[in-house]
Each structure stands twice: as C-alpha cells, then as structure tokens.
Length: 480
Image (cartoon, rainbow, N blue to C red; front, side, top):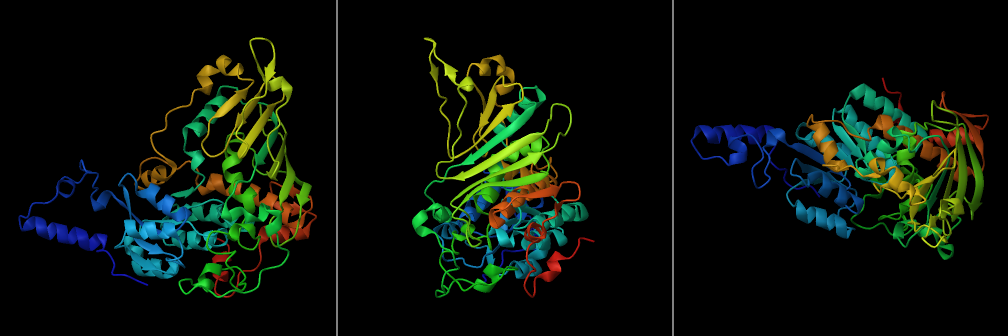
C-alpha cells in the first residue's frame, strides 16, 4: 500500500545547497527563492500537505488547495484508494506521493514533512483526524460539517485556542463575493431587523441522498455484505460503532445514516445558513421545535424534515428571530405577493428562484425580503425594483482567492481564514441541534450560554454522542 516517499524538505534543501556549491545552475525558482513564470514555488515557501481522503470530494479539495502552486501533497491517507474514479484521478495527478491507510501512521512517519492536513472523510471521522493533526502542530482544513456531534465541535473550538494553528471548515461560500456582498448589505442597513428566516433544500438525484426516495427507505441496518478487498473497514468506522459492512455505507452513500452522517441539514445547512448565522450573530437557539418528520426512524434521516429554531434579541437591529428549516421533496420558498415583481402593465410576476438550496430573510418592517441561494451565491432583494434603490450595496465585490487558497495563504502567514473553527464550530453546533431534533423526532429547550439542553436528557445524550469504541477514547478527553 505504501510507496517510496518523496524526498523530505530538509533533505531537499540540503541537496540543493550542495549542488549550488558545486556550481551547477539552479532553476530560477530555487536560485531566486520565489515563484517563477511557470508557477514553480521554492520548498521554503510552499505548504506541504498530508491529505486524509483522496476520492470523491477529496479530489476537488486537493485540486483546489494545490491549484495556485503554493501547496503540494507529500502524503496521502485513505482507507480505500481503489474504489472511486475520483480517487484514481487524484493518484494519477500525484503518482509519487506516499500512501497510507491509517492517518496516524502517516503523521507518525511523515510528520516532519507535513505542514497542514486536509480532512475529507465521512462525518464521523472528521474530529479524531483533525484533533490528532492539531496536537502535532499541523494546520487543518476540514470538510463540512466540522464534526459528527455537538461535543466534538466544542472540543475542536477549544483545540483551536490551545494549539494556535490555522483552521478552516470547507463551507466554501464563506470566502466568496456572495459572502462579502452579504456583509456589506448588513453594514449598509439593507439586511437589518430580520425577524424570520426560511431555509429550504429540495433534493436532486444523487447517490449520497438516497434516503429521500420512498422505495429505498429502510427501518433496520442492512445485512452484511462482503467487505471489498481494497477497504480497511475497521479504520473506516473509526471511533463509531462497527456495523457489518454494506455497500450503502461506502463509497459516498453513508450520509443517510445517523450513525455516520449528519444528513442534509448537517451538510447543505452549512452552505444555506452560513451567512445569516455569522453576519447576523445568531449564535445558538433557545428552542428547537419539531414541526414535521415524514417516515421517521433512528436509522436513516426522514424523507421530509421541517423544524424551527428560536433565537433571542442580540443587539441593535438584531431582534429575536424564528428560523424555519425544511428539506425534502416539495420544499421550496413561497414568496408573498407583496414581494413579487411589478410589470409595466401593472400586473405582478412571481420571482424566479433557485429551489435546490435557498434562504428567505424577512425584515420586521416588511419593506422587502432578501433572498439567496446556497454556497457563495449573492443575495437578491425582492421585489426586484428594490435592487436599484440599494444598488451600491447589492453590487457583488470581487474576491481574489477561493476558500482553499485563503487557507493556504493563512498557513503561509498571509492573512486569515474566513471560516476558522471559532466561527464554523458554532455553526456546526447549530446544525447538530437540528440533527438531534430529527433523530429524536421531538422538541426541546436549549441554554445557549451553558450550551446544554434543558430538561431533556435524551437530547443531551445525542449532543454528547456515544462513547467512542476501544482505542479511540483518548481523543475525547478535555482539552488541557
């Protein structure tokens, strides 16, 4: 499984120096110590990556981290290198990178040559990988949702303070023109006095969200299948309970299961609720209320979920907010006629909206509504004529680097990340409160200061998460 390592940075620099003294001509990027016209970067100015998870979404993240030439993978870790077309693409792009099936062995073996670690694995293993890397002084980029439980997010928030490394969660819209536009809409008083937020996700055909299809629903864990010869199933399970292997877990289809994933609220919720959560300072709610859970069980996520969260007043122009989330077929924004566009002949026209993932923000004065899609999409004002009145704030600013490159640059000492764990950790905790409502199919009150459920030990137990299995408990100790 393991291949011969690339030469270490320390050895490379030593050999470069020896070559220089023997009067061999060095490439310009080495001789001058800066990027050349071909994009080559000297090792002293490059981020060396240890990448955990190379297939599916991992391929996109690694490609983006390395796109500008300022980062390069020196080690890969994956429990199954050979069961994904996108993993094959990653390996073809970086054929000489050393491979490990266990991230801990990768860090033990090549820790001196790794500056930062990317974590693109199923939700239930994000925490242990990220924490292990942070303890070793490595910067970490972790796909959303940050963790699989509320407690894990709290520990990573604490770890960021303790180890003082650069962190970033992979909700890429947070480094975008859409994010900058939303900030200027808030600062300009356009997005203010928001007292209601409606958020929606309408499913699309994708193997990872098969639980929305009625004919595919299950109420028990599936029977055992033969473990693929390429897969280390024990490591795939990590700290979670080990169930008999089934192809509906791996590859890519684990998100349906509460045991391993966070469903769509945990996944797309990070892209849909991201802006209002951060820039409207929502924090955590005081109540989570179940409105509807269609085909509920505690194995896979509901076929349709509708829940609400209540947030208190948080300051000037930040009144109490009711947030309503709906995901499932038929979930789409319904815009009141007062926000429809007016035609020249006096008739009104329903606004055209993206109905995959979207948010409607309602102002207390009802003057207009704010609509946005997901990820980095910009916000629109409804009705459309309002856009002209606030044109200076609606114009989307230009962003010079993407989410992954902002992480790379922050690791190199240039600027800060936009979604560090101090920001994304609390967003993830909000998502876990919703997932807990989906799992239990019941409402509960929450103390946002103490970060504890009020009077519902079942809900608190879900937020804490199950005890990790043998061999993984040491990751869950308090951060010293």
